[in-house]
Image (tube, rainbow, N blue to C red; front, side):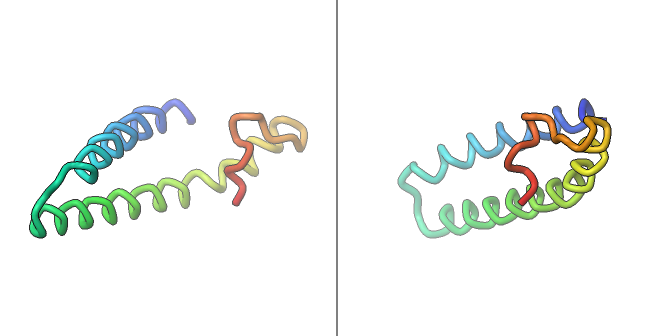
Length: 77
């Protein structure tokens, strides 16, 4: 189940790195607007991913006898 999310997380991480590079380059207002739009698009996808994975914490917690594994620490917000 978790293995299917890893490629998605890698893609989003690479996209975030690329977006970060674009943010720190000097750009005109049109490029800045595109960066902002891309940033909000990425944010929406991250929120969607969190929305889909948050319920898994309860199931994983039950599998570990009520203890969430250390990889999930901090994800319960």
